[in-house]
Length: 224
Image (cartoon, rainbow, N blue to C red):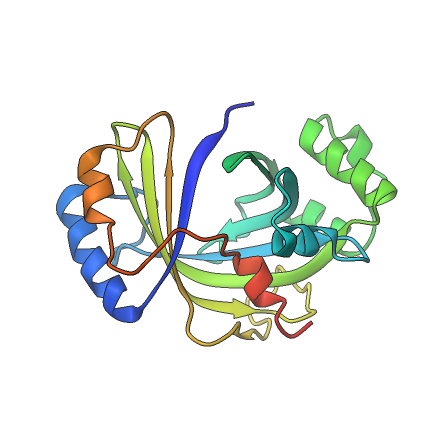
């Protein structure tokens, strides 16, 4: 299992404007972006009846994990279930494809097929749905501006317009009602492998901003 470095910074709208110009001057816009350099992300996060994932995030537990299902730009023809693990400040993400029909089956509580799917990550999710009571918890929507840089395999993303589905898990419905998660929240995330090139380190520096353990899932659980 390979782990990557990750920094998260909560930034202001003024910071966003500055960073956007800096990043465009040095990095490449991710090829999956639309013409305006963004894409829409919809995630459905899982948690236990006692909110294990949420509480571990709030408490800063060193070794933790969370499961989510995700698709982009409203395209339900390309959906993945993901497991994100955090260990000693480093991150790892595993993903496997799901069909819309399989997602709907999970939402409907029809999960007996999962151990026979032949996909290790789905089998693991199934086992934790049984052992821990893991279930879909809430939808998280946001807009992302992604930038990439070859040396160091660097990826910088600017995330904003973060919205919560509250307790809704109507994940495949494009008209599912969501509301702003909190006061306007903008996040910059920086991920890299073995090293972060000095040119990138320089352009992402913002006075008075420090790396923090920000979580869109946590922000979207503010109402319960």
